[in-house]
Image (cartoon, rainbow, N blue to C red; front, side, top):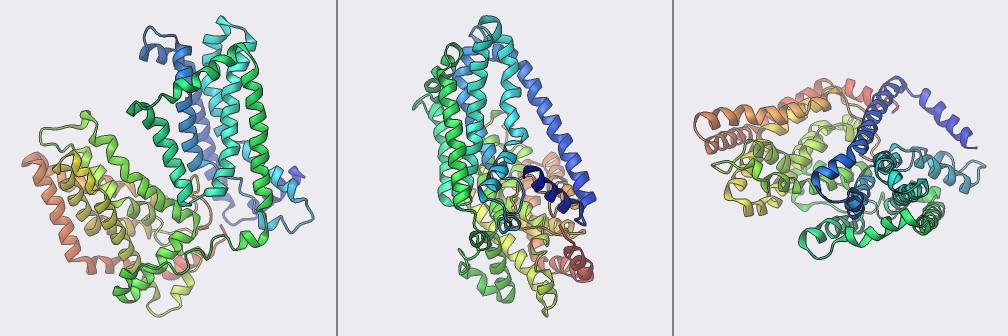
Length: 495
């Protein structure tokens, strides 16, 4: 049955109109994954040397065992954003004369075949061979590496259950944030050292098989928990109505003041909160508001005037992250219903103006949310204000202009991580205006006058862009109208 389902999925792929593109994309992604796994293996081979350099005079095994828990905290985080069930439509299988339990077992087993599940083995096995094997024996090495790998695999099943149970919910996001802060913040604040609490478990695994046996039982139990939850919730009526009506009436009253464009902005907002991929982008925008903590607290980026050159990029990123992420797929979000707007008088024009309104409104919220960075100095607030003006005055038009170059269709219900639907060459080039345009204005004034003169220049350009907003926006509207039939034809292509 497993191979029969694989055959059906293969036939669906080769019959798709985008088969050639999918093959090339998968080959490229496979090469990238292989390269990353080789980097992980290289890090594993050098792990002993790295620990000896960082913790000179201490036993590498003792140091590693006391910090292993932080590896699993990091694994919890990247599994939350990356891991997902394999792409097999349950809707096309549940009505067939195939046992639902068989389908779920096959889905779960397929999900286990993932490069993520090889990371722990590739990273820590070379260290175990170098350190544990000479001092102990093969049994000790197997017990130690087995406890690490089983813990990683338990996280695999737990995360499949966790994401289905709490995905995109406030509770799930709070749990993830709590794990991050309690895991890492507890040691930083001196409350308790989580690594030292878990260290005896990994120490004991070298001398006795008890930890491995307990973890093996937990591994089976976590698989059963994951299986039972998916089995009990895999029904066609649940899949067809998946959270589609949760936020039907959730509109933003402020947008209604802007006429039809405001209604389109409200429609776009409903699209964002109803679908998995767009909600993920919205959540990531909130998460990346913390991006400045990496730079503003680092003395490496300090300068005499308090404004490092890199701060301009950080300001653009923080105050315009939603515009940059969501705007790069400008019309692809509407690929499924673009014909609806095309067939209504003024529908396409008002849709684009509504998107402009939404982008600028969210950028205002991001700027206001970044005001607490004034704690690190008034110059940081000045950077954010200047880059915010530049984003809403200039950068928004540049992003939309690039995003309108041969937009691709996209399935809104798929996740955001490693999903390249809707992504074309323009999206890869999007980083150029984001990186280059602000510096083309800022650097000449910064070098010739002062850093604050550069910020004033950015602000003035942004204000001019706001003043001439209508003619600038009209250029993108006209571009869509000139190519609307070509865009509509592209969106009708099967993914």
